[in-house]
Image (cartoon, rainbow, N blue to C red; front, top):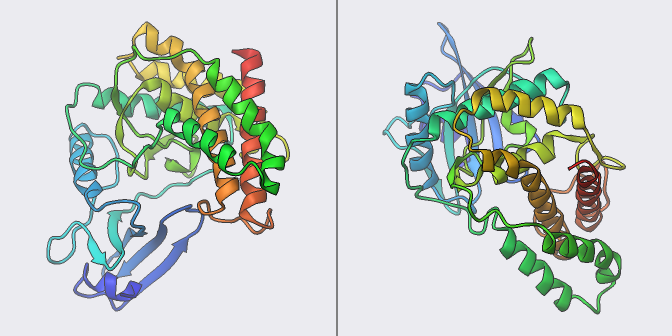
Length: 334
């Protein structure tokens, strides 16, 4: 089905509709839909979902968003079709529509004020879900399963030992494996509901002030530790210039501001959880470095940024190197 046919399944009168693709997604295609019926203008987000995500995820998102809305937490909601369906199946893909919240998205942290607001929002989100008992219907296989990813890296190094790629990736891969081996375990930490993918582009900010309005992209909701959640968020937020920069840098001011905001809202934290945060940053940084090395070997995952790289091998190799450079700088401070 083409996109206009999909839109007709949501609205009886969809003749006057403006469709704009929102670029930047690594997996799914996202569109901003503006519907003008002559009396009022309504805006929505339409997404074309890849088969890596099961439509079961819509049940999880509905439960969580309804719960958060009752707690007065601003969040996108599912828009049903005319027939009341939560999604539209379309061969190997499926479509969904969500409410639209105006705001702006950044790909690198614009200021320490924004960092503090982002941390505060994350703390509020988790604070509301601390006592919420819910069993998720869908979870991405081996997502944030660092042991699995490290084992896969070891295996691919063995399989690809006689290849030209091995010569270029051996050093970074060996360093990642060595540092991972030296990390202390966090096995005693409680499992909580987390967002799971708090890169900066999944936070919607106010268009005028630094205020963080809401979290978007709830496809990775899961039970895991605060160490993993904050490690995932902070390594993104505090990498000055982002993962495609010439040389990654750790921004300590952004780190401290983010945690100031987070601690002001996350009232549930135990001392053990607080102390685990630096280790979480190290863990997730090494996990991502390992993933990028694997993807450099396989060249079959992330979308190629042709403005910066010739191929997926170069792109993923550079991103792995930047993750490890960030890890080294962070480890000099913590």
